Length: 576
Image (tube, rainbow, N blue to C red; front, top):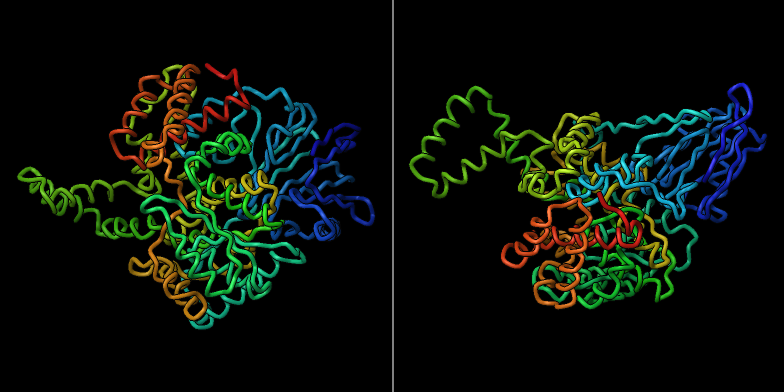
């Protein structure tokens, strides 16, 4: 979408051009137009018409419940308001200069960028290695920004300003009894799944066999009996959990579609996968998401229901429980810790580093780092000095403290007293908005399939905030309340299973698959010529992968490899 400002007395005429994938409807009196980004069709146009009338009638909460981005054009005042949903389900790129505003879901669609992309932002290259993706508000290109979830952009025909309009408020005490909350959760989720399906006829669901995808698939099967479910497997020890997907499929009587992703699949489709992202994106599970969506499309499915969000709403990530162990130590009075406990452990450490003394020293060292910094203990750029990784020329243009400052600001931005809720809120941005949703959206788009996220429905998010933190993680048990609520609905094996990710066994495969090994070596060699990284570090990354921890350093090789593959297509001449 492109908008030109002009005219007189600060009330610009607006010359509009709309990209595909935008439902746009004027109000009845013609004074405003509402646009829903990433949505078309009769239902989207009806919703845009309602938004336009609500705006004219001065409804201040006009766009907050929209799952997509909303653009509101006030023709009388000559202003534009762009609103990202509280947990932004899509990326909104924007640029404003010389009386012109351009908005798109891909920076290369911005006015003036087609065929002439702006220079890369050095800071973003650093953030990409730090986060394995590019968190909002910065974008890979200079002069472009992304609108964060819960934020809005206001443009008056000249100046653009953006601000946070939504802050979650987490409850400390339940407002209802636990049995009542359990019933409400089930009803709220069922309503969200039903809304997500809508009138779509050719609907399927991702099914990994985890809590969330199983819940969504099971509730979808109530609306559409025998709904197709798509599951991925990997022929690699510790990565394949397709049996749990089969348990859920049998339990809910879905129509299962299964596929085992192979190293040859990854090698064949990786160029298309990497370049489908609007920016460099280093989450290796993108390959699995793409092949799920591809199988769905090949079987005539137009819309996939995804289970993303449950862990971040209801306390399902292992780090939440782990961090509470450190927080218990920090609850001990500082004087006692520093004057008694730590000197005693330090004295013991001078005698021996054997277990459990060595473990106690490590525990205290980690506990003395406050949240959210402690969450980055295993980050590559905390285990390797930036000066070992990047060229001096790039580091001269980068604020290496920027990523932690961004994390700290988001951690402090919500209305919550408990560190569990603050970590959840942090993940709404960095794990969901900037990472997992970018992955699934981009891979479904590549495969030609739409996607909906019932777990991130407005009512489900609001319900999750009404639950106290100790119902989400209770005495070290993840998703305590959610699991109790799902008793009798989900198969017990799925409720009791250990948390498992959807990662690609790239690090394991690249040690044995000649094609992937050769691709990684060639791409890192090519990357070394651009001047961003120290060539010795890139060679060392390959060596550490071969000789060290295959999964950990395999992930490092992956993010560097896909960066170079993305650059080869989108910025082939980029270098310092």
